[in-house]
Image (cartoon, rainbow, N blue to C red; front, side, top):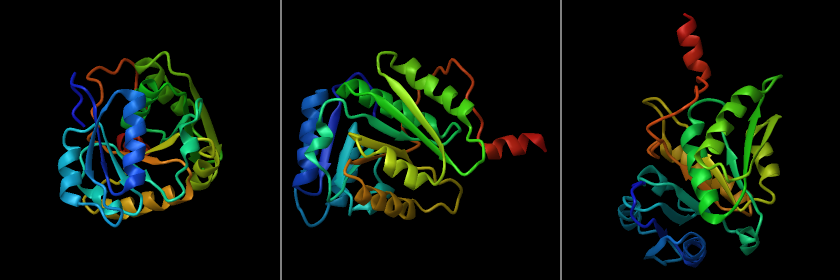
Length: 236
């Protein structure tokens, strides 16, 4: 995503549902709408990737996850059960986060999106630990409040499976924002893309995928919780 002072741009590819969602986002946020292709059968991948270079958002059908490997901006996946009711007033932007700095790009996108569309934020973290890291999540939520003080932010920190918790908390969501957390030289983005697409098919709300290329502010005014692997490395 090119974060400049220019008018934001939303690109739609892959069928009428994606185009309609992008049109409604454009009307709510003032973003310029660019339609790549309206083919209901497939996405013109090259055109979608090219459009993502200077777009704020790319909107795709959830059954076209392979394009996620190549796009350069946050991407909205529209599932087959996507419902117009998700645009009702008051529905929150639900954000799934880990308890470390990988959450920051996802939270920043959610804060900006919520401000553009006039919606509250619900941060969701699930962990198998006996004591979920509530203090870390509170620090991360502080960034969202710092970036957009006027946007209401609440948090759900639960012990349990991530997918099950997220599906339950997203029942009334406008959108669900997740990150691409694959790291390491053997990471396969396409595998993550398929998993995210499956999540989109389980939800009535669209899923927004935010990558590490989403730029953070140059100044962070409070300490960021370390990832668990970084803490173990420092302890050695």
